[in-house]
Amino acid sequence: MTETQAEFRRLLRATFADVPAAADMILGYCSATETWDNIVDGDEVDKGDADANFRWLWQELPVNPFFLQYRESIIAQTSLAIDAWDFSDKAPEARIKAFDICTELSALCLYLIGGPARVRRDSPKIREGVLALLRENDKKD
Image (cartoon, rainbow, N blue to C red):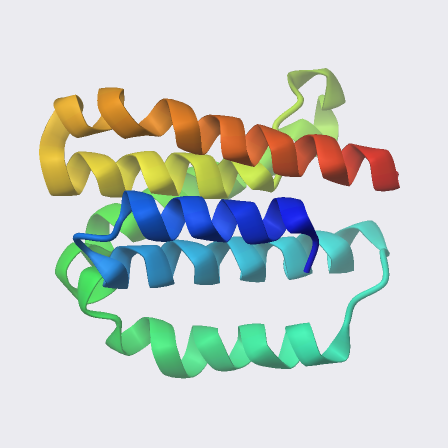
């Protein structure tokens, strides 16, 4: 794990300290999305990370209390983010990345917890954190 990734994890944990299950879910989605992106792009995939992500998807996500409470909204949002990511494959200038799933899922969770005021208060720092991850990823390419 890079320092940027560790910093993002700390940021999410602090932002969602009042709802740790939301932080767990977002971090799981982000990790699974990164592994999926690496597979799709033909990048190296760490077998331990892949194993952990599949176990999370099949064993932890289905019993996460935040996911269970808001699953319809979460499934809709992630489906839309995946659709946008697919569009970007056809139109790279759109610059939609897998990281957008992390950004928009975080914003949705903020909204579900505290409405527009919580989004306005906390989403800018999460968007900055995801942007730092994206910049770090761009340096690898």
